[in-house]
Length: 502
Image (cartoon, rainbow, N blue to C red; front, side, top):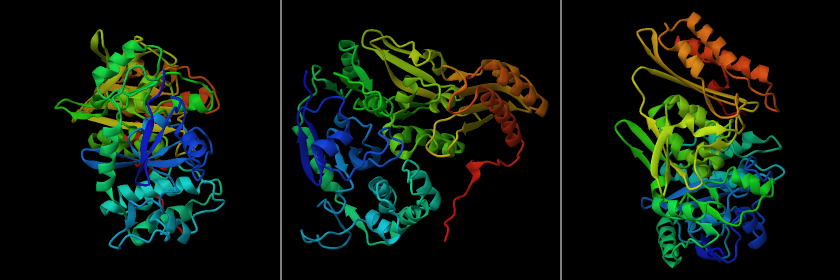
């Protein structure tokens, strides 16, 4: 089996590469095949952001920008997209000063993302700088170009996936806010979209005998899965990418679910939100926070923005990691998952029933998770999501607890509780739910339920926390939920307001 030629748009021109293995990363292609060494490899696992690049793709007739980690992104996943690296911002002919005639070929004009870093002294040793510049470029395109101000809080949120070991965050955050004050630069989006359209027309139809298969419909995806049950299924590759870079696994055939149109949709129904399995975590959390605004901070603490831009909600759920944050949330929201196969059609089940053991689930070899169904909120529910980790930003949870109680006239009518980091799988706290249902919502009830919650799980001790600590945290978080439900202000890093310093 062979791969199709990898084609993408860079500096306004199509790039075509043949014989790119299905498990080759985008960073390897950039640095080793194209000699683009401005993009750096730091951690090789999507944590430091030194390898950040920006992708552009057509969505609804508009150009959509996403900053992503190239170190764990499979190269073929950017087929048919536009790509910008740190070396392109000052040399891309499709990026020009606003209101000025095109610059002479020999003239180099820095993009505001670069110029702001220079003016604010945002580069220290310089190794992380290319990644920061590209995250700033993505921020510029998604906010400044739309007339949206970049606040200190927004800059902190959207740069949380980029680490600076020289501890120079203050000038970098200054640079994020300085971009809007500099002479504007604009991408010629109409021309980019036209070139992407031509690129798509030039590409041959996907065939099932290729080693990298990216079907464009659910039916074709399920047919490919049935035909190739041994192929590695990928979505955003935020986990599979680590298997490639850290465990040195090799895959001779890959099925990419992110091109199937049905799996990329967020559908609003009267009783529920249907989120396709290939919807990015960024877009999935946006749909959820539109219904539950209190989830905003919890959503921004799910890794960094480049990971959320690549990772998908369906991938996180199907992966089944006991420390994945989306599953406790979805369990508390009483979500259902829809599985599908070519031979048997679709079936739907509660999300917590998907798992049978550590990273094991009920899916057959020819089945795929195609969407998540999340019921709309009720008027009585009180939802809170808590993430406990050693580092506030861009860290894995030691404990994740999400509580969703329907409280009517002072009585708990229904309780849904999802927990992560306390068992071999994401878990529903059924015993604690039973201890709360039908009880008056009082401090005594909360204390009794906290004791049940602590006894319900037997978490392990590992590098993130001891089992005893995790049990103690479970009880404390339920009591914190009680206090917040009574109007007591939350006292935690969640309420921290980041101000500029002189």
